[in-house]
Image 1 (tube, one colour):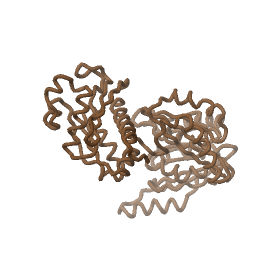
Image 2: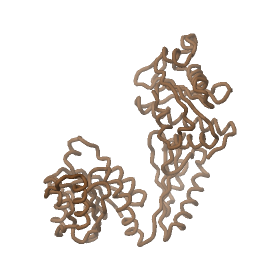
Image 3: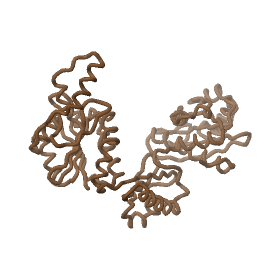
Image 4: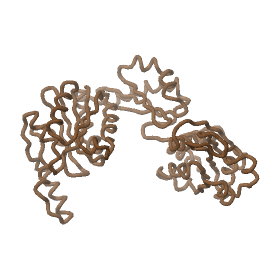
Length: 418
């Protein structure tokens, strides 16, 4: 099955909002093994939308629409599709009751145009909207499958995930199942990873393997089709073992894991506490850890010491060290890690300093980063990065590398890996 995504809304063409829905839907479809060959964006104009539908029907089996299901006059997606397909719009009583109860619960009168949101294409399968008012629809007609979704991401994403996805999987696999499993890698580039597993990529049938890169990380998504979940997972695990035999040294997690979440798992499992002193990352390292549930018992605290004076006054680093070595140095990163560990009484201290860019800092070129780690009473361990990229990209990569490198250090010291 090949798909095209048509996003409807003049605000998208004007650049007022980003088309994040297309990205989300494409990711979800790839897990089902559905190819997305085209993204189309069209304004709130019936004639242009009708033309877009005609083009999509000639080149796609599955056409997914986002937006244009609301109550106002410029919400014209389902009206245009109904006219194009020669189908009437009929009232869905369940959706109408939900909308009426929504307004009643808030003590507000429902205007007549809100009834419009409960209209559906005759013969379509309703996709319930548990986070808004307008229901979605799935319709098969004349060899094409049409899915209509609301525009707001908070409505579209759960509707697709929990209403549309399973129905699509059933259509694809004649009642069988499709399972996906994501392997996450760090410390290896997308190009190198692809080269190493090229034979697997070239020979893939079922399961399929798809690479994806993001912010210095690489993932491989394994997707299997089978008669049941157990058989699908057998296919996936066999392919996973084949992949990890080649690039397992860079593998750190699965699916929704992150480097921060895996680090927190290691810290909690080994009952270790951590604190951090951050310069260029300005609290980003601690923020990433704080997003992980259960971190409260391991992340004790930290400081942002952005200037040389803050490093001296807040951490007690010797002024002479900064004058001799500079703030962008291994000596400074190590001292930051050791001093913050002592200040907060933690098992581990992390120090991050460097020149994020775009300009040089303290005589060091942009992208020069130093990481410091103080574990127990041992001497601090430091590591230098030479990054290339935009300022915030360098900050994000610094945090990810710090999580990865610290996990490696802990494993080397005999702490248990999860």
